[in-house]
Length: 295
Image 1 (cartoon, rainbow, N blue to C red):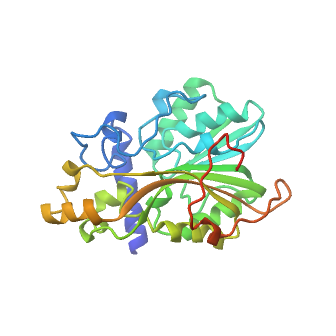
Image 2: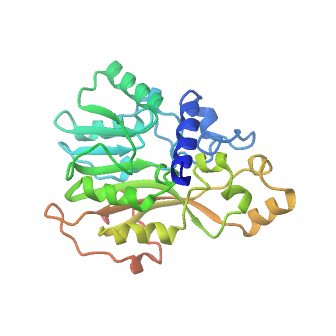
Image 3: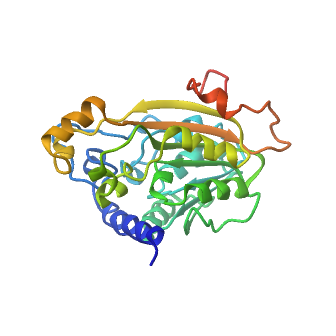
């Protein structure tokens, strides 16, 4: 078994357990994978509770952003959610697409698919479906989606270039994505980079911010924008389980910056032709908000 498959198996095994944990436990840890902090209630997730279409039973507290808030979803759209979990972002997207639209959730953890389908059936949502599969080899035909969303999932996939290529494949010409994920600026301590819990916890598998954006541009996406960015701090009562005190203090003072970013980008095509924003123009960290008109 190669390293890539071993990492996938670690994530699948961990998330089968995380699916059975409570939202509060997941929110107070690194994506539900580490021991919860006693000092910080919420490490990564954003609050969905005021979002239209929100279903509390589907919110496992595992995200690091609100991609559906920024995704410019329209009535009648087909939306795909990568790493759909118990269905949280799918149900928010369903509210936006209306009865004439369709939402597809993809997840490779069987218990997550089961939870999501149970939630959809309980709510009578006939235009939301959940497919079991890898997001680097999606069970979806070419040119299917108007919009793709994802919340804190790409960092869990070893081959991120392949995932981004798959996103490009399944988007319709002129379609777009809005994806929230964890990225780095600077290097993590070796103990964090090599730890399985920190990989499943959305930290060790994160890559450098500039490399993440470059991968998106290299796949041919255009009008790339950072819609939201926030720093993530790992509480000391979690860090001390991995790092000696001296190294922990050095990491807190001079260590890597860990960030959640929500990135928007478009596939070239006839639906929305706009001038291409180059990667070099992102170096100053251009940012927009849902109501600013820049997206």
